[in-house]
Length: 274
Ligand code: FAD
Image (cartoon, rainbow, N blue to C red; front, top):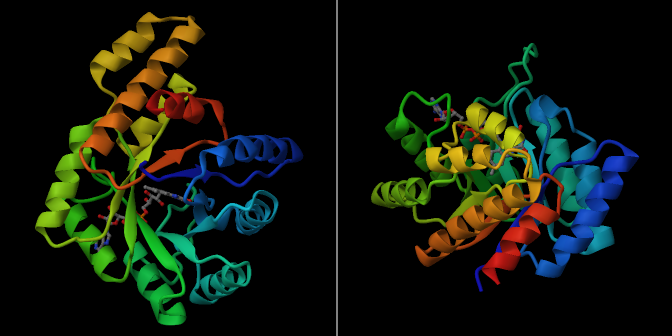
């Protein structure tokens, strides 16, 4: 059985908190190896992320790992955050550069995620397992795909234990990326990030921002369903489950699901995978 893990975002309102509780309660039955909690761009969830990590660890007995993004942050701020997570019992962290919200100009002490990985290792040795992000379809700001790959290798060499990919819907993008990474000496696991589809309009918008390609044939079929919500849900779940099957058959070590704090789309995919 391939291990699975889930990503959540930190709720800010009581209503969102209740929704996350319902989702975490349902998804924990699938025995995830860990769950991760995102960090708002430019530190906009500075207190919500630790609070959510604590809640998931204490209330749901899940191995909850925080995302820590360094863009705009100072060494001292990150130092405090790492201390807090260590005190909460966390042994793993997803280390990111992050993005600044538009209009926010704050340079901070770190330029790239590789510098954050180095900083965590220098401050805490091997206490934390460190995961980083990678981009089978290239990070949108990279000069080109090879430069992005070299920067990814530098990030792994700085001390990362594994990488989780941006989501994609084209299995070949993942396989080619893994092959290219192995060819330049990346040996750590590269875990595909999977985005189940609940709201197709939203996924189209996300995909334009992050550069994930939606296959034309799939897009056309989704459009053809019009308002037939049940067919859209079923077809999208079949599509994502098929992607997962291909990834696992092709050697993916684990599947990391971007849940958007909803249980149903992820469970629909998992049900199809048996
Ligand atoms: P980096 O690895 O630093 O790369 C950023 C860009 O800089 C790339 O284009 C890279 O090629 C380039 N680069 C790297 N090093 C150099 C160098 N030495 N010289 C020149 N260029 C260089 N965002 C959030 O705000 N919060 C989250 O919780 C969050 N979670 C995420 C989880 C996953 C699994 C993924 C895939 C992404 C997540 N993101 C999150 C988005 C991420 O923060 C953005 O994609 C961000 O723009 C890049 O972060 P990074 O850590 O990949 O950056």
